[in-house]
Length: 252
Image (cartoon, rainbow, N blue to C red; front, side, top):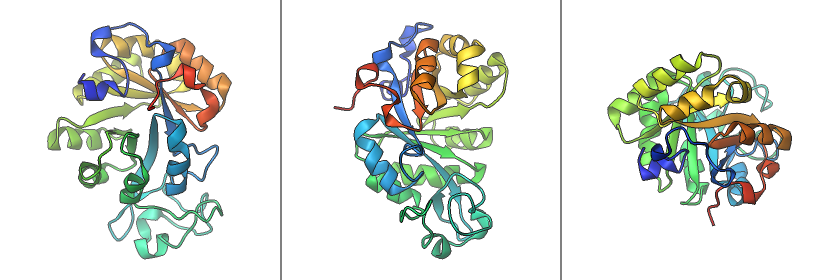
């Protein structure tokens, strides 16, 4: 694991040693979706002073642009209906998220809003967005981690640029298979739900393979404390106040 990649998790030389609490990376899930309108420029700007990294979701709209939006459908977060993939950017740009006044942004806008020292985790919601997302990230000054449930997306990044930092998102799998697949894809990390990270032996298996473990989604202090006790490297959280500053690495 490179020095650059180690900012996202465990030191490769540490083998199976647990991360110290002060080394835990706090990652703002969708820009701290429990506090701010998710996946918006405003969320990134407001979360940035309090976290080490911000996570955003990327998918493609009908006219080809990469938009930062979690759901395939528009109705939960906007007053529109239908699929993001069927809407042109000209229509999407006029929508606001959760009546906040914050518009749906393109990926470029998120990078423009992020301080240069803020780590950015780009989750690829569709396999076909990998190459274009890489192109956007290359023009930014931030360190970027690409994560996805889609192995094809991570394989595309590996083949296009082996130096990209990649993480496999896992929802439900045996530790051995998930670690094997992440290793095959050249990932530096696995991203696990809380139940897997705390109960299944995933952390030990991943750390023994030299992979960092970032866990989702901590919604309160209790969730975060469970993850700290499990020895994870990163906490992906809906709120930045789930971890005191003394329990995480600092960008200051």
